[in-house]
Image: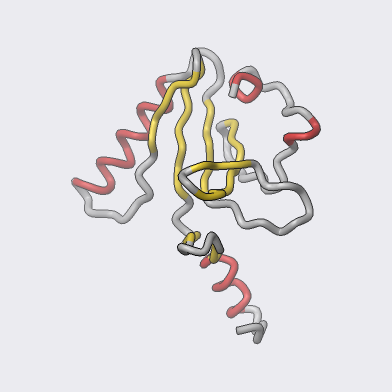
Length: 127
């Protein structure tokens, strides 16, 4: 988290195999059972289930603002959103968001609904 907050690259062994676009520094994670999360290894095609966002130093308020905006969208507007969880680890603030386009099953398998819809539009008949 510290490296993300300081805009430094991650160590080579923690290279993020599934970068997500956007302004904030973030890393994608995969649920690995018992409520634990891990960084998926490269080239294994492991679908990610969560996004960890870490604001730059001095912009920690963005975490709270995004969390409040999501709650407003859910409660006031009634829009379905993945409610983020704000947390602190040491001096670092973070926002953990469960990906809306993934489902994790009891056996640990993950289904990417966005990828499924893309393949169906492309005419892929893998189903």
